[in-house]
Image (cartoon, rainbow, N blue to C red; front, side, top):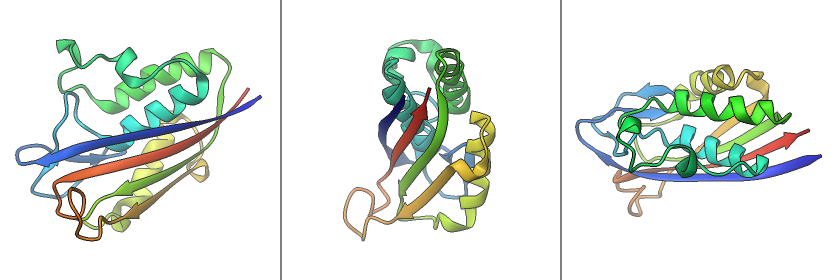
Length: 157
């Protein structure tokens, strides 16, 4: 059996927070505003995997109303979900990710992000690809007010 999942996340960019994508900190004067650490890429991956497996969504696993998830490490959240996904017999075939970010330029960080995602998931880096798009100066991404991530995931069992 194979299943496809789609994940999406969007966060405002604010001063005083780190800009994290796939667990890698990118140098920038703003970062994601979120209940957890705000890593939009890990959040979108988590939702894509949960959608494909039919096990729920990130909010059902880690409700933002619960104080214990405040500033949580998104890599930890993804690993927690993956334990359940793998226990159900699912295997990741591949992830295809899109980051929408005006600044900073993502390409210099792509390899590190891909390798970190693969490490967190326990898969080969060749099973992960991350593309970057700008917002073409259109709000909110193009004016550096937000960052978005979209992810498709193929699971097999």
